[in-house]
Length: 116
Image (cartoon, rainbow, N blue to C red):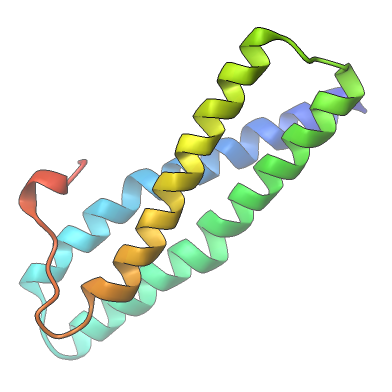
């Protein structure tokens, strides 16, 4: 059972991180689009964030918590991993805020923020 939860945890973490890495590229594409293409990109960014990245984050955290209690792993390195998860959560929240404000009239995404 622990192996399955660990596999789910790793798969969900991979999807979560991939979503966080692809969103800045989607945001950057905004500057070249207008009209319906811009609305389609906004819809796509929201689908990636809400339907893919956010559920993956939730599954990652729940599976991680389950692993902590199943394995009884309360050590220093676990505290460091939890700090890393906290950083991912902060980045995740920032990406959600950017989606809300980027597609407003006059909204933009700086070139230096592009990850890809």
